[in-house]
Image 1 (spheres, helix red, strand yellow):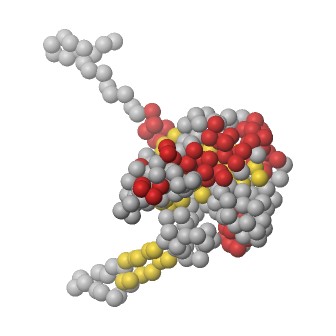
Image 2 (spheres, helix red, strand yellow):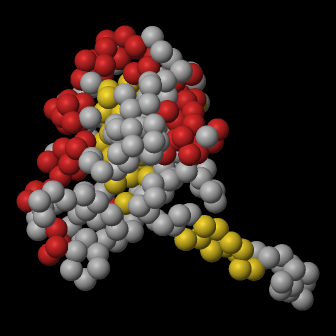
Length: 287
């Protein structure tokens, strides 16, 4: 039955409900993939450490009505804690992504064309590739282990979650279990750290990923005793293919819940001209 108004004209249809809002209203479960920022957390030695202090504490100043306020000051590098690398972060042979001269791009003390402020907020499909689970070693990969394309494909097939163009691909190595338990081991200077190498990075880029993330300090494999001496996956992803990198993620909870496909949400701070930003990535699924 069609409703009409006093002029015998069809009444306008009710506005359609937004499908995303409907899903959220029905209930969602949010998996927090970011690490809490705290003094003393493990980090790359190449970046300024996180520090937090209270310049004003309650009671330092009390208003006439008895009210009091505290405030904070933080200092940190933009590549500390869970963070995203902008395309300005890495150059190769003097060039940034797209062949831009790296020295010229940084004149004035900021990267206006490749800085983190140019990364649009992400609300897209995310895929967790749980490599150690696919390899039968669910606790984690050995130190210094290189995750290969065959490993990534094995995880894809075991989970039934093929990577598609525009996805954010998260690679779990299991190394994240050391973040709080053994911060020195987590950075892996002597032992090395598992992760993708050049071949794995090319595989991710070849699938058309928008961004790639991992539970490790530098995303990619670090050889025992080598530290950050060479980072081929950064070159391939950031410089050659324009794929953003997210590091130091907490992937243990989502892996334990066996959530391998989800809506991925991430919004970097719009730090104009910066090479990276702390982030709090979320994986959202329906209840």
